[in-house]
Length: 55
Image (spheres, helix red, strand yellow):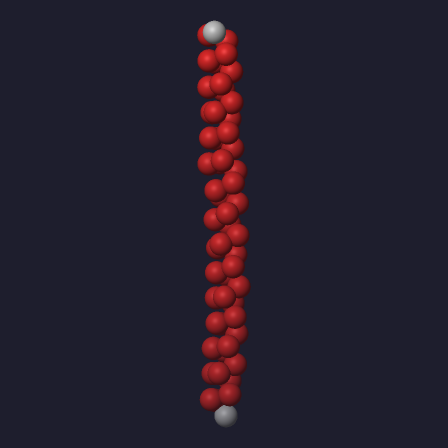
């Protein structure tokens, strides 16, 4: 019985650690990368607007 409890606790701990240490940071990186593309687009549009208004 003790062995079954230990195996279950190890499986739950493994799932929890892989969920928090692998999947959440990957999700955050993809969200930050999408914000980065939006920011890059905003910078490009702002630069083009500045170039056009400078004439």
